[in-house]
Image 1 (cartoon, rainbow, N blue to C red):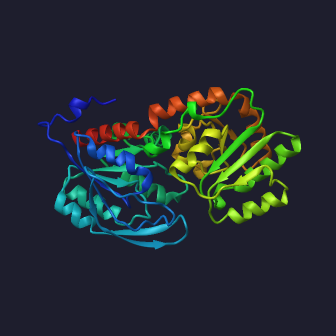
Image 2: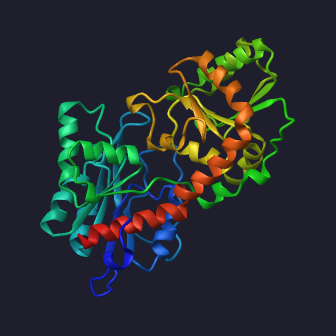
Length: 383
């Protein structure tokens, strides 16, 4: 880990850092406010107010967080795919000329990032990508495109070690990269193992799903696994907290398989309204596409089961799920394997819960992520 004093030794002047972001997305509130309050850097976010993610909430900034508002011109192609041009971003870079500019992940959806990259190089502003560090699924040209920008950047803030090692193997200079992990807001860490209602004598498995219900989440696997558990005579309850385009289809499948007494739908819940669900759950199940919701379960001491990772099947946060330590994986698109994994995991819940809490504290809290980001930025500034 870099020495903090050496990283910021240039006359002890705080480097000016601009994060070029899409919007003030709600789950970043705690980490952004922590970065802004840290005396080691002068931090500003340059972003718009219109989000390309139609269901994502934003937050209202409070001092000392500084925000330069610009306009997002958004074209939504599908629910998860879009094109964005950020009007005013180039003018802000010319006006501020920060020491370090942080851009989002060499993402071809954000069109304005690439002229910003070249302009920053002309202005001798250090450029850092905040990135998933993915290369697969892009085709030859897509891979070449991303590698070009990663190799010519001054730094990369990678979400996990898998992504960092992936870029290193592809030829990106290791010294430019820092693993920063990811986190939720402070409020999402209020539940702990002490709050949970799990007891060793509890013979009924309480399974929890929190999140949007859409096609890529493969909710049918969870309902089919519940039917298998029912046929085996296993005592269990599945709580589904969320809404989305697949809600009706999931409810209809539940009725068709006669699972009304076993599967409960609670609608979308946020913040304090989730506390009781997190306190009661034994196991969190994410049938597919395990992102930050995995950290939400683990922060409450709940081990997570998800589908085995295949290529682009999961975001980087899936690296927090470690087999027989913080959770487990079931076979790809197999409801029977999911049912087996739920049964096999239940007796281990107490030990897995302790491992979940330990890992989250080490890597996935706002404080831990803030520290990693700032040290990464200071390393880039000193390079």
